[in-house]
Amino acid sequence: MKPVGLVHIACARKGENIIHDFFQFGDIGRDEIRMKTAEEALQMMLKAIEI
Image (cartoon, rainbow, N blue to C red; front, side):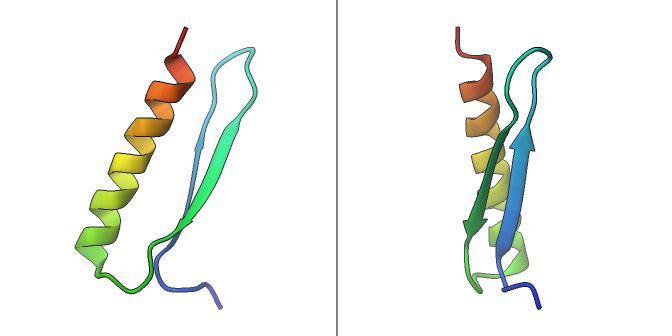
């Protein structure tokens, strides 16, 4: 069974390695998990487009 608050996020760019990470936010509520997931995904995308 999947732990509560477990989220996997990945980002890919053509010709680059895939970036993957997972987060265990715990039982903080669905809305808070969604917010933290969006924040982490945005940070991952910024990291992926760094020149």
